[in-house]
Length: 117
Image (cartoon, rainbow, N blue to C red):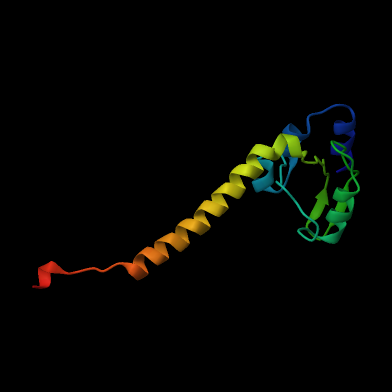
């Protein structure tokens, strides 16, 4: 882990090193990207290191029960994510309303089976 951190400090690309060196094949395939992580989502050692980082900063090697980690943190900025947040919000609202509308439609429907007559 120290050797990888030294390579990062010398200017190596985080994503490329994660793909080549990570033992976690799922995150390695995504260049080390774990997606959005909130407090309580990971083990305490990882969380403490991750949330202490500034935007774009790379941690020293961190050991947890899962092994060694080197973390690069990026903070989401509202202006950059506004459209995605709006789309997710609207999709949730539309889905909820469609579910209610469909349930009401089924409750009030009068279906006649003309084949049985």
